[in-house]
Length: 388
Image 1: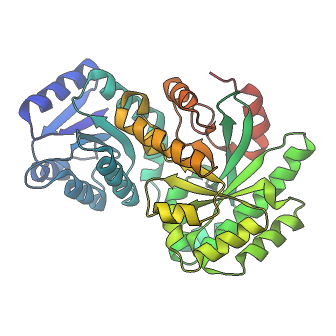
Image 2: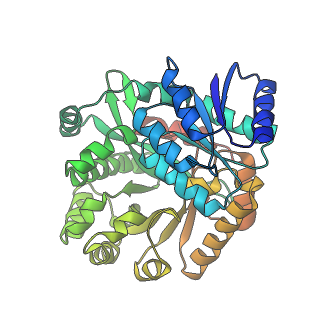
Image 3: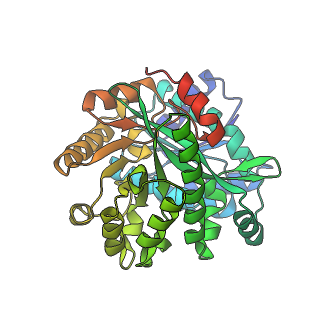
């Protein structure tokens, strides 16, 4: 493994290098400022696996550095190293992901060997996906054809009740089978969105999800299905009738479908009217990635949501980060007062599960339970699942 440590404080940089050596990292480079780090990265024959980025540096700060790294494809993954407030760190993580970077989260200062080990373990889990995506060269026409031919399909990730571990629902996540490789949505969904095909993608996921819902019902596996809605869909005032007709045609009741809406989609023209009509017809409405977008408390009180999803950025490492835990606690209090169900995303450790259970969160979703799997494998995954 190859790691670059970008840290302007000499002592902290040396300590990070020493801890990485103790963890068995084969190759470690270092830089004390953004400009020298970029110069070093430009000379390397291949990008490092991981860059540990200090945010608060003189001259070029970590945010500006991340923009250069993304634009020039100079790293496979990054992790933020900072003592700044969680809101700022979460914003930078969101920006970095929007740039197309793999973000492994943050390491809160002071850096310890346990924190670094957790970050390296996260990279190890995602390494194959990162390398595969790095090699992808996708043209829009190819994606459009795949969508038209039905080769973009939903895989399903379970959502389980924290109180008793019962699987309540699944989220449908788009996957594309391409030349024997499964392509993840970040590689092709933005292409479809920019080309105005977000509505067609939403329709395809909804129709296929309804088909699987019927199969599971016949096997006595009754689950609610969550489907992500493209923000472009919410500008059409007739979409509520359209979705109702689609699910009815496939023998599914609207109450069995939960539409997940990102916070940025709330900014869409006529969005509130469309969401109100969807709710009127019996669909569930979930605000996705809560706390990372543009919603205000006023919007949250105005939109008839039935569920709130806590973003994985707050959940990851929260048992060791009091500020992250505080954000989760505040979100749960708000959800209870608004009578919303709550699903925590990105649950990957038993410690995170236990913390959420203690705080009274309703449900969890994440790798601790299962990755997203094809519909035909879901029953087996659920049968194997055991509550921690």
